[in-house]
Image (cartoon, rainbow, N blue to C red; front, top):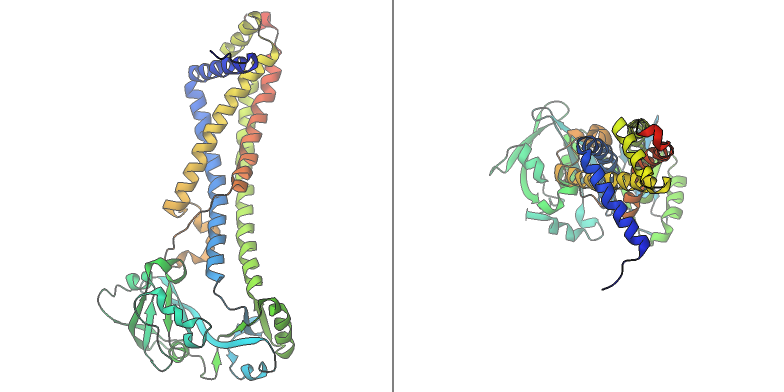
Length: 399
């Protein structure tokens, strides 16, 4: 029969004693573990929600044009003349320039905000593959007016059912009717849930945009390594425009989500500090029963290091269990409940959009970050006071 190393046997015995000690004070330790789990749950939810929103933004921006051109006036975007396209014909390396009309349409009857998008999909690179995103029908053709493709939530919110005709208000409050010629697949809800796609002329009519103008211009570049160079050339030719590259838009989303998550995390860290102070206070102010226990152990020959090891194992077990419970609850909160408690803080005004599904991605770096900001402070707040208390003379502890 194999012999257990003496050092390992001692640690196993210490662990067994720590478990029995935790069980004797189970109500107190259960309360600490639940509060600790709540703190980790909130911190983990923000971290996972940030990752999910960043991944969602990357997925949305994956098929966006390499360069977007917007006309600016007094720091605000306005419609851009299509004649600007001719000025860009001299730039070598541009694959295609697609005029686009888009905007947000607020439906007062349902209090929902829809995204209206219109462009010539046949002129887009790989535009013929867009029909694969539909569960039924086809995209509006360039000459096919009065038609639209709807996202899943748009169809539900408008309560169309089997009907294929709906109406939207123009700015002058006159109604414009559309016939539904396609429905986006449920698999594309992340991108198309709140989307209404229509003909460019219909979008101009709906938003009262002049026929010679569009919202912006989408530029597709043949060589991805030349995007920045071409963007600088466009800015030189069109000084009254704002030229945005795909990488700039991606960085903007990352900065926004990281800033909001960081602000919320700082607020949560104050709760974590308060919890650590509470743990320090509880560990420093031992009850008479705990003091007598330490005194008896020292009379029986236990050294300060042994008592400290017991306290360390107790804190480790409580914090490890709280970490597992908190992180698991955070994942369930984000994956199955769409982070309903924290999502308004992160997405802001967009909560008036139809709902979209979050897909959290948990990385080792996220878990290490949560562990560092939660478990380590708790261990320090309990083990250090335990060392101070373990130096109490045995005769004074058992009186």
